[in-house]
Length: 213
Ligand SMILES: Nc1nc2c(c(=O)[nH]1)N[C@H]1C(S)=C(S)[C@@H](COP(=O)(O)O)O[C@H]1N2
Ligand SMILES: [Mo]
Image (cartoon, rainbow, N blue to C red):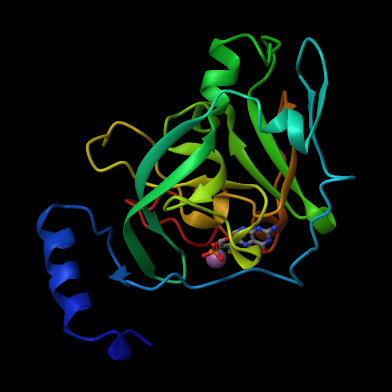
């Protein structure tokens, strides 16, 4: 597929590689491939809600309007997909879980250690709490200044990537962000999500090339 992207891709890949931003076994794309299991769900703001439950002092349920009044932030990241494409300098806007916790909007129990993202059709993705609280994990409503498109997760998705200046942050492959996200479950112990149960790596570190379990 990359052959059809022209000379710009090659030059861009050289630059990203030189800057140490291309993990092993990855190739740069200037497109934005779409990958998921199953159909794209419809969005109806009248019955959409976002739930926060589990190891929290108080469960939360926000409708679409309430969700849009939460504090918002922006982050620019490189995305790394386990199917071996990477995309550089993508800008995401939305809600940071770290910020919600710092501002007391979500109050975690001390027992909270893992997080399950719950999406439409029962799709799930698990991550350690530590990663969900990093700056490179966002509950995103916008990509490069525009609302998400339906196939990339509209109206809301988890997204995780690499912030080039932040090599201290753990960086999992892109599948660790659930599109069409509807809730977060804070958990005392780890449970595997949809792709993790199917044999993908639990930790999914892009720099260690943790693709399959
Ligand atoms: N709800 C949902 N989210 C999902 C998936 C899925 O099957 N369902 N697949 C994941 C996988 S495997 C990848 S690689 C990324 C792809 O995101 P993209 O389509 O925006 O490139 O979404 C992730 N989020
Ligand atoms: Mo994927």
